[in-house]
Image 1 (cartoon, one colour):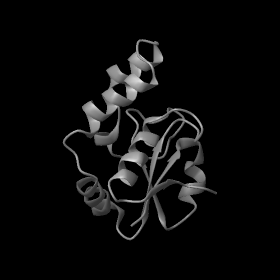
Image 2 (spheres, rainbow, N blue to C red):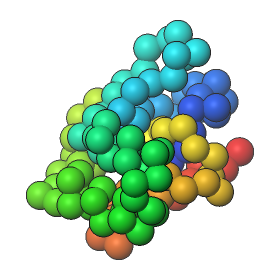
Image 3 (cartoon, helix red, strand yellow):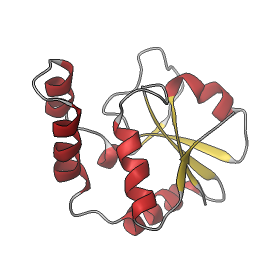
Image 4 (cartoon, rainbow, N blue to C red):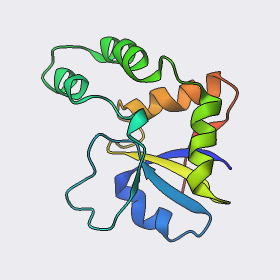
Length: 126
């Protein structure tokens, strides 16, 4: 199983491929997304963290530190990989959130976390 990241606007393209399983790592799924999507909220930022960055109470560096402390501490990439494998079957997983690839986003933090801990993860390219 490979792990990729992407964003919700690409979900139709992702679902067209039989070898990919989209998995939301967002706190909330988009209102426009009517079809069900698997959610893995253990990698989602808290409502408070989202609110603080949105309202300018913290900057990106503070967000990164808090995200790592609030979400990633106590987790191992191997445990997360095994959990994702448990429902992915023989498919590769695509971790989804909202922002485009060039925008600041927690999925970039997660991708870096995987890569820095021995599990290759990249942004899915079409």
